[in-house]
Image (cartoon, rainbow, N blue to C red; front, side):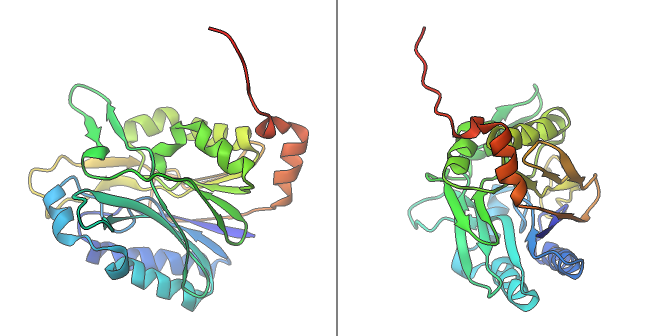
Length: 279
């Protein structure tokens, strides 16, 4: 199976972001990818909550989702939309939803996953994030049936290995980790975390990422945000198969799903329950 990792640098204008995304999805399909993956917040990245509230849609009305579903059907590919920022399905919920969607080659939504773990961190005296103030966390893990059995996660989830263990034990062969990983923490932790999740579970890990400085032309006063890039494909043995670097584009990688069983047979720790007693 050939996968295509789409690396983006979206800004605060969904109408400007969409043509770039569609062009790269088409480029991945032209290179033979049958599974194409985009990063977290494919439609819009801005710290301006008022702008989000004005521009975001519910799932059924979102123009980015509609266009990408049509593209998946036209190209005949599985499309993992890493995530979209959406208005909540619950009319009484003021916070947004960070939702990953798996689109089948006929354009239908095969699975959806709402990001569980919110990025609430203080990186330095001048840099802090409180994702939970704007986004409602999801409540359930999702294992999707697609071109393989796919465990769906998003970005900050990668720091919570118990989620990946549960997905692997439920039958996942591929784990998706679409991200807009902060440039500071990305340089320190991105690759090692993804390799660890692959080694622990015996799964392929596919992580399409945002990169570079994100334009905020319509968000005056907003502090420019940078994302780490380096979309990665990691084998079940923990080898980095492909690295998308720091520029927008497409990275294509071939996956042999038989490697999942081989890795797990060599080191079967993923299936062992870890009961222990002590202080």
